[in-house]
Amino acid sequence: MNRASQKWPLAALLLACAVVAGAPLHSEKESNPDKGPKMMEYTARAKITLGDDRSVKGKSTFQAPETFIFQHNRDGVLYEKTIHAKDVRALHFEKWKPVKVGENKEGDVYRFEVTSFQIELKDGYTLQVNNGIPAFWQSFVLENDNGRVRFFTYWMDLLKKDSGKWFTGMEGPASGERSFCHKDVIRSIEFFVD
Image (cartoon, rainbow, N blue to C red; front, side, top):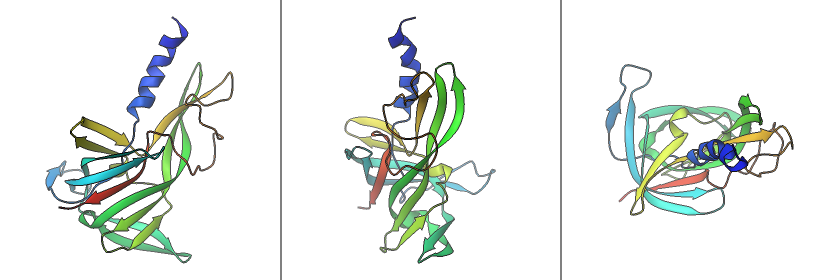
């Protein structure tokens, strides 16, 4: 097997972990009402900004509970606040942390997950959340004239055993938070209502 074909499965995995973050508002389709909180489907016009400053506009869809509680910091005080999905105007992802999820003969596989982000509400209030992102905001579907794409708030990478370098070519250690993300990962998403 040649070197290019060996990289293909990992390249496909990295590509599959593209990018996009949340969108609240509108539609109300219920999903899986028997497990956990009642999930609703939300759809809104959205603008997604990726890690390399590219932006994509279209209709975004995601599922989330109607309300959820976040712990957030304000002036050094930790608060809990209940948020309605329909009130979210934007999500700004700020920091990612590598989590080792496996290994293979080429090296260790890591998933870089959001650890710090801001929620901007329609009324202008912002929450600084520093304890990770809920599963329902880990990916978003965006649809426009070009077609349909799923973006992610995380990415996968391989720390190569032979060189100690990341498969993606990104810099940084295998521990600690980063304030930059992969170029195809969602850095922010803004929602707009007609």
